[in-house]
Length: 485
Ligand code: ADP
Ligand code: MG
Image (cartoon, rainbow, N blue to C red; front, side, top):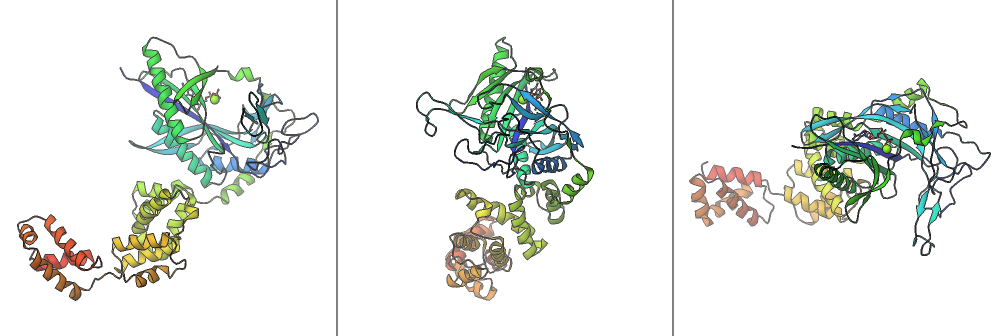
């Protein structure tokens, strides 16, 4: 009998505010330990936290982007526990009433689109960080605590247990990652911990009620997320098949071994003794605030995808590629703006194939591209007016990529300096076609006998004779005419 895997994700996204969620201390990454922890962040006696408006506004933006309910009144609560990186003994979070409730994220799966439901998204503060021996000045056997991160604003986004494979979980995490960057609430930097996932995993027989879950903590790369879920699900299946039971637990993923191991048995909400934080007023969000945030939001990726498919006839795949980031979409739209909607498909190809390939190869972000949208549009227009063959255009692209010429005239300058102009003139090409026919009687015979491939060989010879400058489409046509096809 088969098994079904069930996954729900809790994602901590660090909100990109200048200051902490309840204090004015800086959130900048990479400072010397403990220079950015204010008295409020560590709750020294007598201080009072004040909610950061910019953090709340980012939560509203997220709620609007996923079609959620934004509670007009939510409550900050203390979640009480002890840990060395939380010397104040509690974390300020939201419990019974989160600021954002419900909403959905759409993901692409191998069986088409799937909607993952969101349970909630709540605001909370981050804790500090334990540093272990070897870090900074720490000697052997020493651990240190860096409280710079204490009080950094987080939006914890909780999904329903709607995913049923590691691929779906990764697709969800990627979609969420791209959305939070798109709407500008999180920088998405996973190495710096700005976007971390906890994966809740259980298995069950088809049709059976949900199994007992184990929660894998703090996965900070998509690859680890996938590996951890795969290992965990397999481990649970083997444990159950061996007659064992799954105990609810919090587990850690060890990237070196690729295994998960239990860290502690799972605590329940009542263990945390949640209660409303007496130092903070309930969080009130007015209708006009929500309206203003809504009016300031840019077009969302889902709307763009629909428009690209409807207006430009792009495939769902291309539309998805082009909306991976706001920068990519802007790049593509700028090209279409310059060349017209007719050229949209060609522009999409250049962005998703050549440009994406080169960026990927050199490990660059689109914001760092040496070939601007204006330059790429100039190049594509020379393909469209038949000046360049596809092959030549790729060579020009490589030259642009290497920084040959920075201005918009660079494309024509490269074409001129390399004598690259494609020959599309029928008169000029006919003579070449005739001599190729004479020199290749075998291919001619094969083509006449119905072997279409033989024509490619002939066109190839003619391309060689023109040093790659012949227009293959025109050559093709002339051969067909001359050979009476
Ligand atoms: P907690 O905050 O204690 O981890 P929640 O009940 O809020 O608990 O659940 C957290 C996450 O676990 C959610 O993303 C939810 O979808 C997921 N989840 C709940 N039950 C299961 C289950 N049986 N299998 C897999 N995931 C689950
Ligand atoms: Mg949890």
